[in-house]
Amino acid sequence: MKQYSNVIAAYSIMVILIILVGIFQSWSIALTILNYCLISAVMTMGANIQWGYAGLINFGIMGYTALGGLAVVLVSVAPVEEAWKVGGLNMMICIVVIVAMVVSIKYTLKKVHKSKKRNYLIAGIIVVGLLLLRFISAPAIESIESVEPAKTGFLGGLGMPVLFSWLVGGLFAGGLAYIIGKIALGLRADYLAIATLLIAEIVVSIIKHEEWLARGVKNVIGLKRPAPYEIDLQTSPWFINLVEKIHSSKLKLINSVSEKQDVLNQLVIDASSIYVKLCFAGMFLTVVIILLIVTQKALYSPWGRKMRAIRDNEVAASAMGKNVVKEHLLIFILGSAVVGIAGAMMVTNDGLFTPGSYRPMRYTFVIWVMVIVGGTGNNFGAILGGFFVWFLWVQAAPIALFFINILTAHLPETNEIKIHLINSAPYFRFLLIGIGLLLIMRYRPRGILPEKIIKQ
Image 1: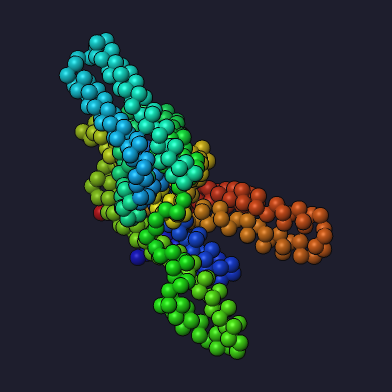
Image 2: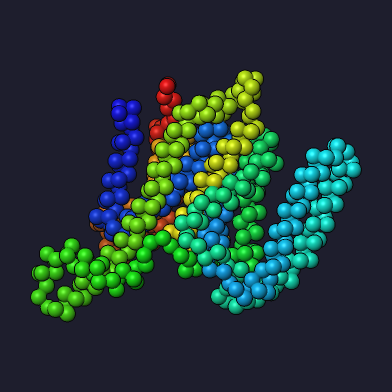
């Protein structure tokens, strides 16, 4: 228990901060922050698996996040029957063509000896395949996107429960990681970082511009969610009675029947939002706990010790007979799959899919900051880093405004300096985050909860 004292203290502080937000702002805001902190924690765990366990630099996190979000659309949205009628068959044929290209290339690589002939064969397969794809898909895409473009204009999905999309998001991300890993994991660390960042940009760009797939920048709204809707709760007798019972002492003080009803209606509206966010928090927390248990078991297993040995000295590990490339590929797939799950969770929480919001050059590095601040190689630290950075990102403006009001309390309301500072409060976010990160890096250079190897 003593070895986890720092973890308990750090997590207790975060819980207290969430509670303070609920008390001084609102419980709805506090739960919103908590949910995004939990989603960020899943993302940081995925990045920590790659960087903390194996020392792999992956700057393509937003690409895998976008694939997780795409999975929600493809799994939970009902199929658009008219779009399938006018172009669905052609798109399925395109998938068959792609599979045939991959199989043909693999067969050529296996059966034909390395030579110019093999290179020409592979180039021919790719050129013929691309021309065939273009010929088959172009008219189909035009037909699909012309089907009620203001509402649909895409094929839709499978119409399945949205929770399945979390697993599918992990499979999508893991599958892409396998392809990228087979190509790029042989690169030097800095080249690998550049390659993964560019691939993330490509993935996001495809999702944004291929409207037949998920409406592109037109966005997909009204996605299914595994929690009840607020409007349904507000008309449910059991929920209204529950809220009335909880606030019975407050309602008894109101004599007017109409005023009491108005207060009750407002309480029901507020409670419905809190109830829905609590449902999401419970599901997200379950995912975080499961991943934490699994990753902790893996970290201190023989496999985890092998991965840390490869991370610390690849040459020595290779000399001991370890297949470094194979292990790197496995860890790359696992970490990316976890990030894909987080991407699906985020879209499920938002209820909409907005490809334009995935900006690899910006948010990828926020996730990396979370991992580094929390503590590289420490699963508890990765989760805490996600909580800390996201909490500071959201609450920096209110904190700045609080201190501005204290410092300028003696100035009149019309004072230009006071007005300017108050209007500039949102921009203090970057200042406070910078100061917070500098303090952590100065006094905790290995992160808030640094990696600690427990001898078995």
